Length: 201
Image (spheres, one colour):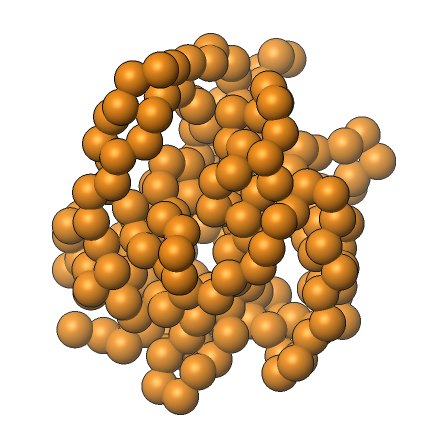
């Protein structure tokens, strides 16, 4: 099974034509940055732990830095870079190299009904020791092993309380947290791009 080195990731995403969804007048668009850091013969990926916030469907979740497109954003890639700078103080235009875009994901938080799509953009971090400045939306930054997720070594089923009921969902363990839901689906989409033989755990 591939180790998913940065070079392999760069080649695979470079060959990929990202799937897109129909955008209507009511569609909310968002973008995230998938920031990869080379570590020996594989890569780690940056996650943020979202701060607890009433009314936020992703309150307290693990996520990629990013957010909604603003009118002044010239592109969704610019949205991802602006939001990353605002949320964690990381200037991707200076500290990272752009790799490419992967498939849009339809966001459908449980208990909510709205039309939103998220575009993930992948970067390689070039600064070995970046300084992070977290804003009020972010509680912490964690790095997860892309290889462990790809192989399923840190995969499992986890219980979450949704609408007052306990439900079980798949996720990847990163530190003491779990990557699940929307970000989990983005990772699955990415693995199918990086490894044609990969199957969901």
